[in-house]
Length: 499
Image (cartoon, rainbow, N blue to C red):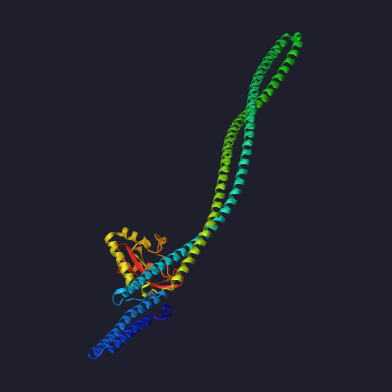
């Protein structure tokens, strides 16, 4: 029996039950009327008819009140099941059916909140992951460029290391050669010193010879005088002194020749002495020059020694630098791998977010899904009121709380710009742009719309501006309207996607 009734609708089952009750009541009335006589039978029959009518009316009312509410609830439940969350379920009356309708309305509202939050959250995740993906792509390109630069630097460092080592070896060899040259210069200085001493001895001997020649010249002169005297005495002696006169003449001639020879020797010795003096001076100069050369060679030897030591230290330092660059190169390669993995992760996260958005796209949230102009104005004015009441710092902190703050409503959020420096002070959706200069930010048509917006805010205090912006998920150009007001040194704005 239950299986048979289960195939019928609730209305049919209720009508069947009330039909059976009416038939039973009619049968009992007829039976009672047949078994009685007279007016009692007529009264029983009338009461039975009235009861049957009341039962029929009650059955119709109960069936209608129950089935109509259940049919409304079933219709609303089907619309909710199909994803239409715009349905408004109104409870008709009280009791269990009224509570059922209220429960369906609460279910619809709750699903609306959940789907709205899921869409907002997944949109944020998709936007952030797309931005991370783009950043990772840029970082990957810069990392590859850095790796190439490090490789070139490492190659150059290796060449530099080889050159420095060669320079160090050459400096060491030069140091040894300079030391040898220094020793030779010292020996040369000693030899020059000995020459100087020898020249001095020769000079002194020449002076002694001059003195001896002077003595010989004096003796010749005296001999000449004696010969002259002897000639005079021989002349006085006459014939007896003729032989003596001849001898005196020969002695005189010999004395003159000796004097002449002594004079020539004296001139030669004088010339030799002058040349020895000149040679002595040259040797002295050579000695001083050689001493200077020795000192210079010693100084150069010290410099080359320092260069050699510095080259060795430089070589060791370059080897350390080469090791550090090699380590950095390995780290850069690892970073490149990590960036690649992060890019894959961000791509996967973006794909999951998009898939989740597609999954909840079956739900129709109606006009409540997205913010409108009135809500954007209200959000901006709420931000202005908070800044005026609690100050700039509290207001900026509240915006930067993102989803935990009170200035994020579905796809509506606040952003604030410094009216003087054009810097992004707060952003309710993308905290990465905080601190950046927004003066040169362009829409997809190349307009500096933020620059225009701040200019209008300075002149008029607020208003609307329309611009084109790439949708964070589809990347398609979408028109947005932004309402903005100037409060203090900030321009507070909220954008609305134009439907």
